[in-house]
Image (cartoon, rainbow, N blue to C red; front, side, top):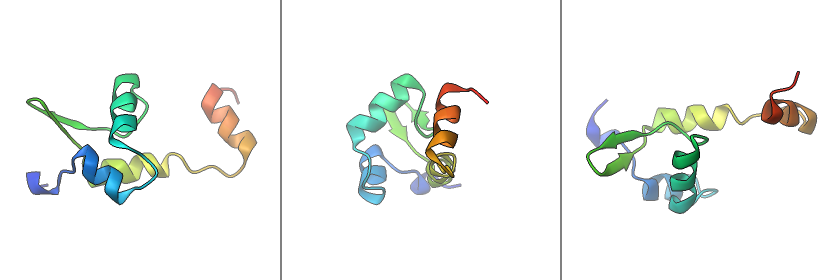
Length: 73
């Protein structure tokens, strides 16, 4: 992977229009969003990590979502 392949929060937001840079920042604090790379003061995202996070959010029903959310079987 080359550093030019890393995305800023703004680029993630522009590509995946369902999330804002502020939401990404909140998720980073909570540890609930996609994995990120911290370089100095900058934060970047690998496209594969964003896609992996999106894939982890695929559910077959609302009950499946609720069990994943609460950790119950």
